[in-house]
Image (cartoon, rainbow, N blue to C red; front, side, top):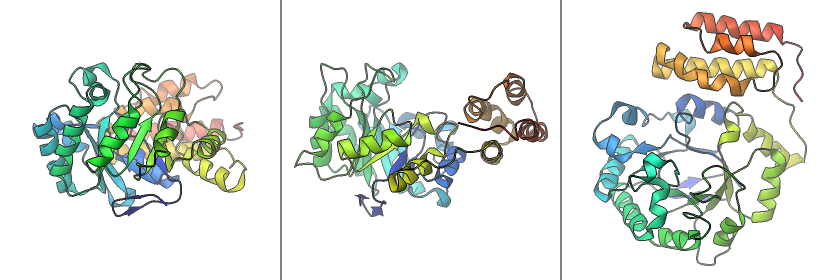
Length: 330
């Protein structure tokens, strides 16, 4: 069973990916409820933390029911990363994770995220700075390399482990791929099979079904896997994968009542955490995913993304349950 510092994880854990504007406490709570073993905050700018930016500070909120949980930071300045690690240390998550994988231009242009893949020496210095700034275990999430001609994950893994990183998650794409094309987990398997590597190695990219999860588990021999986009609007995927691992059989699809309950809980917890107005507005991006594939749903979706009060939204969810009570998901 993989360990990160003193954190003992189950055999082949399933991790929830840190996703900007998605992996907040309400969403993490849902995923924990449905089987996620380790979760991470949305990524947080080191510069934002130091400036005391309200949005960055709010992302530090963690709750005991979601442990173990890591807070993920990013940045391209050593002193800022060290100072932000100290700030993170004070709220006592279970670990600190460094994002060296975000491919978004506004992050890369600042010499952060996946931009650091072009300068492994800088990556090592930034990692050392974070380790100096915290008493918590430090982990890293990154990509295979900048592009297909500069895949350097083998060197990255060795050098990060050498300076004290305690687990590595690899999104099996290059920065140039962004989120397109196929992920190639064979590179991650090569890292795992390197006799020098002793830290846990987790894979990420394209896991969207129990069948694929089992195939990749058996084929690549990693310590666990991280699931991102497939969990959006579908937190049940974690328990579905675990059940399939154990039995080779599928759990029943979540019913409309299950989906309504998840959406209702997500909305309630969002309002509790963000305040009613912001909770309602920021929940709107999730409804399409909860009710994907349902015929003649446009009118209901329009209500969900325009209604302004909690009472009206809960009434709309009740109406959806009544209208689609006999609908069978396949």
